Amino acid sequence: MLYHSAMQAKKRQVPEFEDLSDLRDNVVLHVERRKGVRHGSPCVAGTSLRVAHVVRWLETEGRSVDEVLQDFPQLTKADIYSALAFYQDNKETVDAEERERHTRVEDFLKDDPDVVRHAGRE
Image (tube, rainbow, N blue to C red; front, side, top):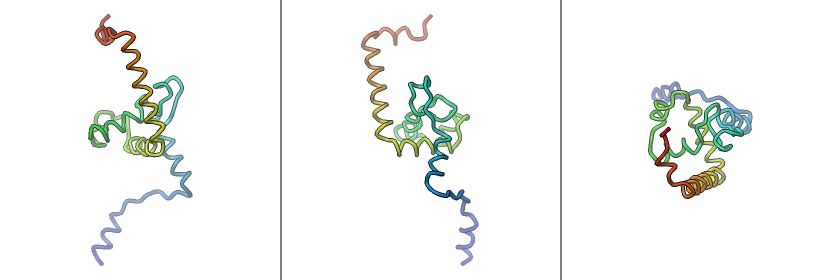
């Protein structure tokens, strides 16, 4: 019984939500689409970091949340987890937008392959 009481004391307090819309509203605070920022791709609110970046860093590159926070101290854990939640809820749309973005970049490079070679030169 003592172990059970100690475990209960260690439980993290999680805010209670009236319904799922409250929880979704919390995610919306951390993810936004803005005209003129990353072609309207969903980004971490107040930044130009696309949700797709966060997903790639964590799921494809295998980075930890703490590693991402170290590289991007302007982010919070809530930003990162909200980006992941947004992605899970909108995976098909985000993935389709990423494919379209890659196609645009490839087309651009086909039209002007020297652009990469000249990048950064004045």
